[in-house]
Length: 335
Image (cartoon, rainbow, N blue to C red):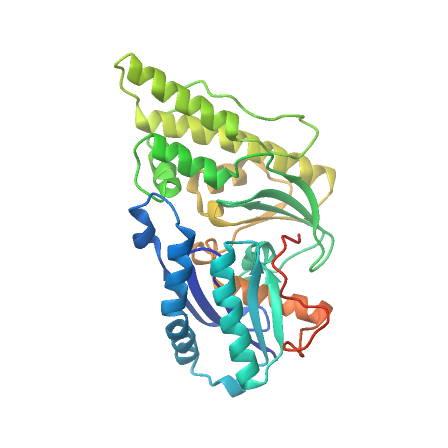
């Protein structure tokens, strides 16, 4: 049995969780800064890191309290090491390092993207070979997994990530921050009546591009305003979402067939999108499709604890964390 205390602070959520054997979540505390950043229309890195500093100790205490555990019972400390906002990451890394040092525990740095994928493993058995569709505000990637902790990048975004495109289009339409979930809800009420491009690029490749689609929406909104015409917001949301999902599902389907995977894992913040969940089940029928619980789609420490378990089994942890030598806490974007 292994009890892991996991820390996540890559953006604007301060989160600590205790996870048993990579599967059972004993406690899960997330302190969101969404209301703070809403007035700016997006996350302000400096404000995010300062708020992590203010609240991180309290989040640690709450997670231990909810799990009814003491530091003595913890076997491993895991922390997000990147990618993410540098200032925010450093708060979590420093807090986790101090905790591990104070209590004599091994320390493990975990890639944030690996965490999102393993969030689905908290409630499902991962079956290999698998294809992971990782979609969030900063990432849009198709990743082939031959086994646990084996990641082969098949395709990525060449410009905007899908979640970023959602938020920018939502802002153009005058929707509140965060705009992605609101756009998704409005899309279910509208119709695909605006003719927007489907950026497939090379249909045999697995890269994505959403900047042209975003620009097409901005141009239609701008031209309509010039002509004193009113945009039908629900229909524009439906049209934008239809274009995005056509591309994402088509490329996911092609990759799953080419690599003969047993399972498709959909993870990241945009995995909470209801339109995506509905359509992907309808259109990909030959492979098992799994999603994390809604609570584990966005940034959280439970997913870091899940990934840390399998990473530890494969690679071990950094025990002499105050000495020199190779560190597992680099913040490079390693996939």
